[in-house]
Length: 73
Image 1 (spheres, rainbow, N blue to C red):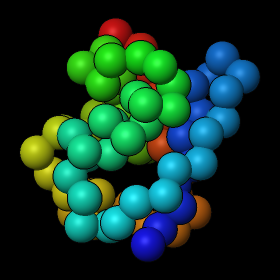
Image 2 (cartoon, one colour; image 1 turned 60 degrees about the vertical axis):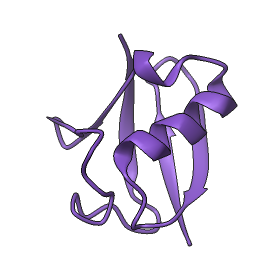
Image 3 (cartoon, rainbow, N blue to C red; image 1 turned 45 degrees about the vertical axis):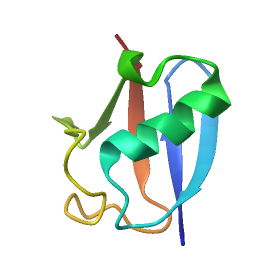
């Protein structure tokens, strides 16, 4: 179990617990429940790279304490 910090740059910082094997799309679904926004309206970036929904967090080297940027579409 890892904990990832997500910042939407509008003043919200959210910590989400997940597994490193989870797909980015599944992570966005969990995040959308906390935000009250549709998961299809969320884009996640790490170091300026957009994370694709069908790739796992581990493949993007997202580990415990990793910081992701959140953008609304």
